[in-house]
Image (cartoon, rainbow, N blue to C red; front, side, top):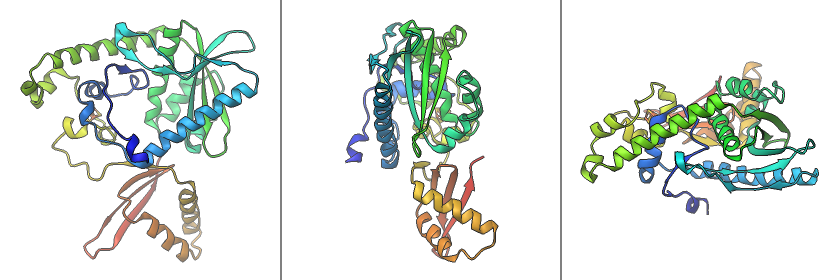
Length: 310
Ligand code: SF4
């Protein structure tokens, strides 16, 4: 069922939800090479679907609290910059002001990182948490574009902890300086796309033409590892097994326990066996705050490594 949902769709615009990404080159690939993007796995599809369920749940909570949610899924109107996207909705606050709303469900680890900031410290919270979870850097650009498009001065970003349902709410003010940076980025991408599409099919296949037209590669190979276009952009690098994201609270809590008992030197044989069994064939997986890697050794035994992501 989930496999059917993992397919490629034509990309005709810059997505507001991606424009904050640190690699501009990947954003050009997203427009020109969407057919060749490496597909994500079913686990990630489960996580995406869960995100949509949580988004609906938060909207219904807001309505239960008396807030009217309107313009749900309204499309952005930013053709001039070839920017597309859909806003989660708007609500009218107790002060009678209309606020664009963006809802993000997240793991308890992301939630905790954001937790020490107050409702007006969105940028500080994102900057701090993105050191551990770089994908968060995409979020501010998205809300800024929604604000610009809606001609509203302030928006609301709601994070939901997927494990316990707690909410963290941030107010975000329109920042013209930052939106200018994002719009200029969109224009540069559009120019690259235009130049690339002007090439013949044969010319488009040549890596030197891509390198000539596209923005430069970034040097952060950890980021590149999770990029769906790394096989085209950096074809000489062996990325090993692609990184998978998993959401399995039961397994994760077993690892918590395993670490704790290991530290205490207690007898944890049964648990250790369990963990070893569960880690088998997990070559490169992020599970909450853990990075699990492993491979078969010369004798055919599975060698696992579990590290806490700092
Ligand atoms: S592989 Fe790295 S440099 Fe190339 S597009 Fe992806 S993130 Fe950017």
